[in-house]
Structures are given as C-alpha cells and as structure tokens.
Length: 138
Image (cartoon, rainbow, N blue to C red; front, side, top):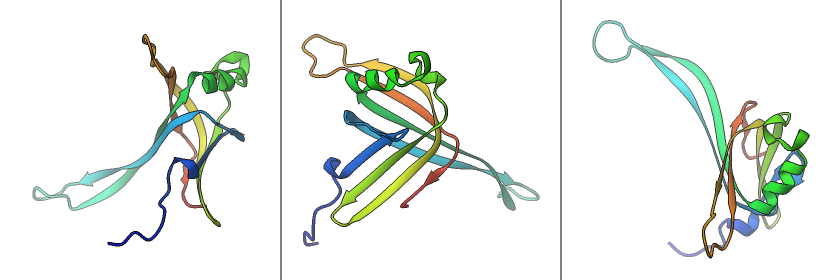
C-alpha cells in the first residue's frame, strides 16, 4: 500500500478539561461499554438478550506541573470536589477537525509516578468516570 499522507500524531491532538487547554498531557485513554444480558430458555444457547447499563471511563497521564495547575482550579484544592466537567479531545489535521466530547466527567482515582532517582519526569495519572456519554466525531 502506498504512503498517501500523514496520519494523526500527538501534534494534532488538543485536550481541554473544563474549557482549559491541558499542555502537559502525556496520554489520554477513554472507553465505554454497554452490558448485554443473555436470555435463556430451552437449550444451551441464548434465545434473546436485553441491554443493561452503559458505562464510560478514562485515564489522563499528566506531568506533575499540569496536575498542580488543575488542582489549583479545584474547590479547596481537591480534584474530587470538582463539579462534573467536559473533556474535549480534538484531532486537528489541515482543514478537518474531529472532536470527541466526554460529557460530565468526575475524577475517581489518582496515582503518582516517576518518583525515582535521575527521573526525567514526574507524572500523575488521573482516572475518571464519564457520566454523560461520549459524543464522537462532532
């Protein structure tokens, strides 16, 4: 297959949390799932299904400096007291921009890492729940 052009890379991605651009983000992951309940009757295979709850979650990995800025904007400096916020991930390349909006997010866990001798960077991982859904490609 010939090389037809440049694919998305980290330079094309902008991440905003609560309207603020996060500059020192090392990675972002997000996912959603919907439970399917099998309905059995006669026999060993399902005869149908019902749908269960939808669930969304994600994880941001930031440099400690970016975490400090985020924490300074939180009520009483506590990220767990923040009101639900939107995370916007924009994939910009040329004239086209594709945006994923993660609606009504709340931080659920934080992990501090990279704390070792001769480390190049100190990181914080923030896990979050997505309560309002994910709008893809807006």
